[in-house]
Length: 169
Image 1 (cartoon, rainbow, N blue to C red):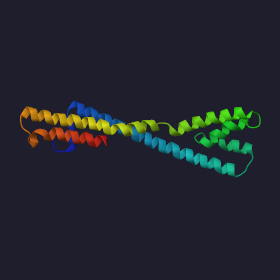
Image 2 (cartoon, rainbow, N blue to C red):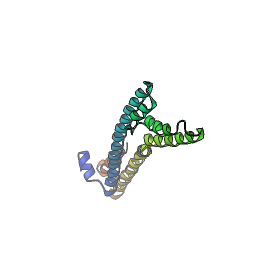
Image 3 (spheres, rainbow, N blue to C red):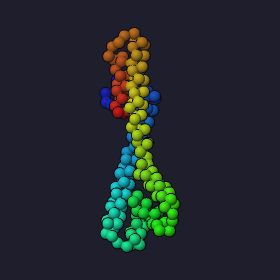
Image 4 (cartoon, rainbow, N blue to C red):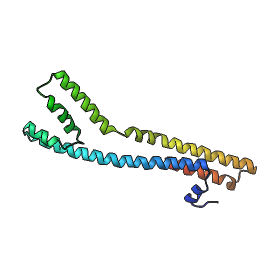
């Protein structure tokens, strides 16, 4: 009988191992997305703060364009870069459409990959619950095969169920 959680996982059935691998993969990818998004948003905030400081300095608009040009992650600078060439030369409707388009693009950049995190966070407990149900079914199969409900008969199935529950959570 396995004594440690690692031994229990190594002696688990194929279905439980598959569920655990799926949950581990989802966790690793989620942490990668979280770290990437943190770094991206941090850089975007720094660039936006730099742009706002230049904007509030009341400098010449052409100087502001030079400041905004290298700021590729800043949503504010990107909106400004899209609107500046149209300022004073276009109709208000054209400027409004351009601003709406670039605002939508910048919003999508800021919210990118959040749906993956939301989906993973909401479904992982249910995947773990599937492993729990499988472990409980194994425990009941053990009871049926042994003809009695001793702890030795059900312990392995219950332990598998608890491991997958913990991984899902």
